[in-house]
Image (spheres, rainbow, N blue to C red):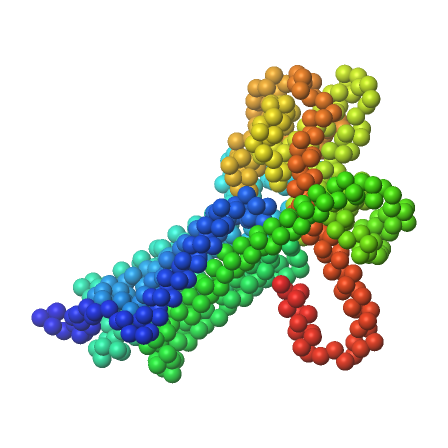
Length: 574
């Protein structure tokens, strides 16, 4: 008898697939877009060692895209095949995807984007001093206080913990409200939450809205209208060459419409004709598509663009390798003086057409590194997020220049201690904030010479080499004595800060000499030549053109149009 009193929706039979023109479009569009996403994902994974992608948390970003795209697919097939399921089962799937799967994907995606701010902040250290790496301050009592342990974790790991805690709350709320709401299971639940009587259309509308959906809406509002604007504000002043800022700001802006339009389309009757073909959740999935564009296709385009610059630099260097040695050395002192002044920001006249592609050669790069690496160092750290490369080159050059002609044993130990600073600051995957990109063979060779002395002087590794960005700076760290055994002092030593006061007294490898860093230096120098240096030269050229245009437009500044101002704003954004 009780079953006879249930609303008619619960006894509604399943419908056949709806492959009309709209349904066919959704299926074709879903398959095509999914194929493009798959191709883009494969491209990113295949090029994951590219400097543009290597610094990104690619695994985290692609995991978020996986979550979001699965929900996107579900929305695209709702119109053609959604009604082939029992109505209640179909809305159960939508409810749990909307309440759990989608929020987790958005949270992971914003965690991935937040790494951009973290990396940008850490790279600033290379503009302060290319010699020393700043140690993040911690707090005491990490072994006894969970709060202190949490504070000592690096920012990305703390973000993931906060997201995990938030998802636990979200799961409890989503499942709890589903159990309490009798709409989805009329045999149990809180009284008064039943599905009201009415037409089938009215009952289906009631299934898709109600108080049980508000935790999901609240989660979206927090990310899109609180977290996202904060990230936009923090990222606005960063001008990187990797497209990471564009990706972060673009994703944040493209998601602002989603929650308001989803709520409006559900609660405003005028949207009923639109909802028949374009479900309310599709407003959210528009932002999912924008996420995928900015997270997959923008980085892919940046990789292709970087390849073009890499090829141009490599070809220019090969072309002028012999000729430039003669031509550049024969250049007048005035020409190179102008180049040096340009690097100091005083003039950009050195980018004359007479030099042309010779600016992309190794000779030009070495001239800047020897005479005035400061502007290149600043550009690589603040714009290219590869400040460790230029800092490593300048540090090694200083170290080699200080090597005595006929060193004594004491001088060799001083040199070895300074070499340990270079190793821990720039090379060691266990110690360096941003380890330079070396081949496994070269890295293993340097580890054979420096790893054990580094552990003796510095203590246990500050980071897990498998997850260098998710370091716990305090847990498990212990300092070793001169015999290599660990003691209980529990402090990790910043070797660069004490190198002038301590000296390594242990056994030094026979392979250590003034050429120990030569292979790494040559590799990183070529990496800078083909990655950072072309961007630096290109930007200087653009500054020259911009300044010339600005001088020519000074007299007509008062007549500047609104369109030109908007164009300038868009250019500053992207």
